[in-house]
Image (cartoon, rainbow, N blue to C red):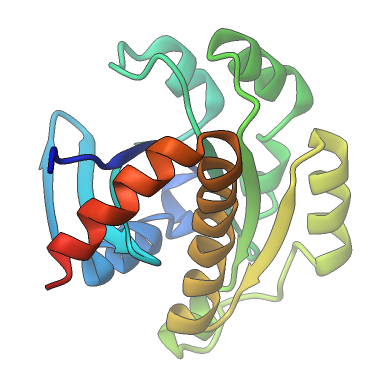
Length: 194
């Protein structure tokens, strides 16, 4: 049986204080193996019996993804992280830059806006009041025409929910758009899980 795994390119976009690294930390926990090289994180994991190679890159903004020389020709998923205590973390995400990014990479993948309550996650008392409420997150999601909007308050539960949604969508696409590759991946996944 020839090895087959599905490859996903993921962009993690957000300001330095957005705590976007929590997504990498979660992937490290569920991955069978992972490595980092030249700002690219590589994870190998099984999701519902399907072997997946997930490559992730972190960026401060969409301009960074456009201007950096990155090896991705396309992105399958984008997670935009916004610190709900810093209104600049959402103001800097605008339709013009998102459109430029989408055109540059012909992006038509899974898009997520994640409002991160960093103080609740770290169980600290916030220094100031939330500046971005749920309504603002939903408005920004609609403005950019993103697929999903999440509020991250519980590190394990909420981050898992984001990845379950992304990976389920990709699983569904693979199963119904290319059943032959899906069956090959599933067969290889059974070998790996033994």
